[in-house]
Length: 271
Length: 325
View (cartoon, each protein chain N blue to C red):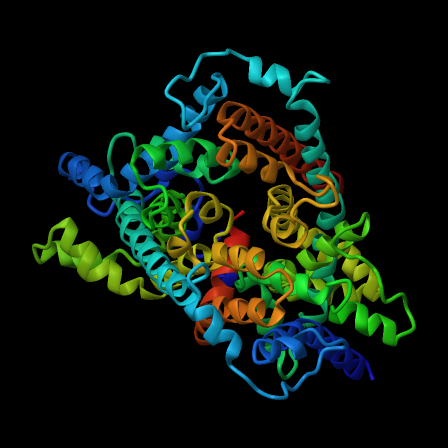
């Protein structure tokens, strides 16, 4: 009996989480008229891809271009995060050097700085670099956060030392040990970090809304608000845009669900 | 710290925030390591310096000027920007404190829900049963979507005329003409509930990991002592979860106090400017109207307020801890 109650609760919750997403998908394949029917139909009739055709080609809302921008920005950002954070984390996990305590302390301290404090000055800095309205503004500044360094350092520190020691005895230098021993051993952690960085960058909203202005320079998330301004209550178009912005991250999540959830639950216990 | 696996091996002890406790891989190579270490650190430190450290300092500097990004002259005004924000009747006073109030309302109502509801969900799921990981994955799914997607989707569902929510409420015999996004308090209710829908899974996953770290023996001992399910929860589960609950509370407060996308997409600050949050005000003032001095000052006030709140939360959890132990 308890089991039954439990499953009823769980299924009700599932319905609550899945049905809005399902309606988003269904509505994106409706005609404009059917998209504004109430209550909404759950099977598009007729089934049409007109919404996608329209938003992919529109000059003021080039959704396909936004898709490519988002892909490029999120991939580049994830790479930049993994490359810079892994070598920094290795130094902090394994090397002895003067100033180590100060560097690590500073990085950890900034983890607790609310991001709102960085918005205005970073706009000024990005402007001085002539990066406004370019994807560099989306790719680079967000890679500077301390989470990746902290996350990888915690991972590196608990790797067994023996493998590194024997590589040193064989005459390897620090760089070789890092690239040939430590990085291959850390694939799960590196994948988790890359995944979290990709998701965060893909979904970033406030920053791209203000630093990108040209229609063809938008990311998908920032573009969705442009799409909404341009099409008020054309929900067939808005839902098609939302689907395009969701499918890559949902697919990635389905494939790598375990990494995402474990990465998140681990971050919670680090507190 | 990395207690998900529950193992307490030697390195575990060293995962304190003290890097001097780190075992040196090669003692006696200190000289060479100095240079190597800085080379390893250089790419990251360049990013960190330019986009984290510099902006923290530059933000203070900007806040002491009348700083318009588009104008060549940026006159020094000292603490005038701060003084204006605290002076009733000044140009910035009303819009700023109105936005702080909006952030306060949203935080006040969303945080308790986001602490309690995910805990309940995590408790329901903290048993072995078929399909458990699937349910967990489904509940977490909305969180991987961006706030823009969530906002646009719910704007559609909550549309006063053709939205699914009103349509189905009508079917149940409830009012079917609620203007969810353009009147108060409906807009707050809508944005709080949408945020719960969006981020519930995130907090639940963290609680779930915390629940699984509570030693089973404690529950067995409690059962032997004849503890009821409620007293098991009260005296075993809650104390065992305290660090996790504190983490969830702090991160949720910070996330809620930085609420932007929901308001930007779903209400655009309406009605009037009532749902324009503090960070929304800061972004509009600084990055759209280019009153960057005022915006930088406002962001420091918000940050200090948040840090004080975090200290209070920290203190409460500390005090609770010492009372119970």
